[in-house]
Image (cartoon, rainbow over all chains, first blue to last red; front, top):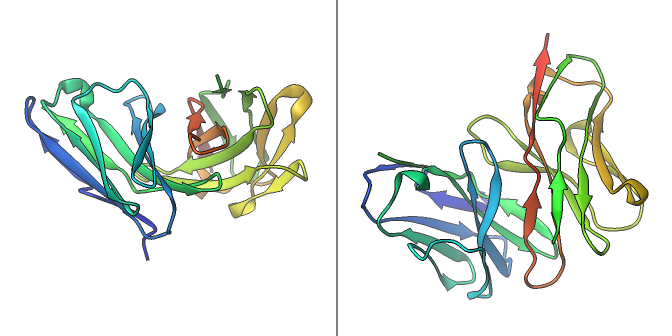
Amino acid sequence: DTAVSQTPKYLVTQMGNDKSIKCEQNLGHDTMYWYKQDSKKFLKIMFSYNNKELIINETVPNRFSPKSPDKAHLNLHINSLELGDSAVYFCASSQRGDEYFGPGTRLTVT
Amino acid sequence: AQSVTQPDIHITVSEGASLELRCNYSYGATPYLFWYVQSPGQGLQLLLKYFSGDTLVQGIKGFEAEFKRSQSSFNLRKPSVHWSDAAEYFCAVTNTGTASKLTFGTGTRLQVTL
């Protein structure tokens, strides 16, 4: 049973397009996150949600819009994709400090 | 603001040799500290964590880490490395509370020679 799942695993798209990445966790955690890992493997938090409420927004361009329809889901929508958005995006969930990561979505913008 | 420094970008060890990966953190209060491993093309797997209590923490795959408050360090160790340990290792620190977030170091790439 996958604890934190993401779809799709790979996403290749052209500049200017709009795309979404979905995330689901079956751990019953209250908090979910999106992280971005760049080409140099650096991981940085983008957003965090607690019980569907936005808690952290780390100066991410407003082309990125997270949406949490319920506690188990946190989706990421990206408008007007740019070359610099190419990265691996990880979803995570946590409870009492323990964070569990999804397998990642490799986004390539051409 | 919390931060993590991993001074070694790349380390090469021979299979069977011991390993120590360095991690220094900056955080105002008692930190929650983590080590994650990322194999090529994979997600992040939690190796071990320190919240409180015993400063020597045991993790999966034979790894351990020691929290040293006086040195602001949380170094990862393994007595005998296996070829399958080759991966990227990330140290991370988090604050506590509802607005908790992991702050990662830049990672250390471990290469294992046979």
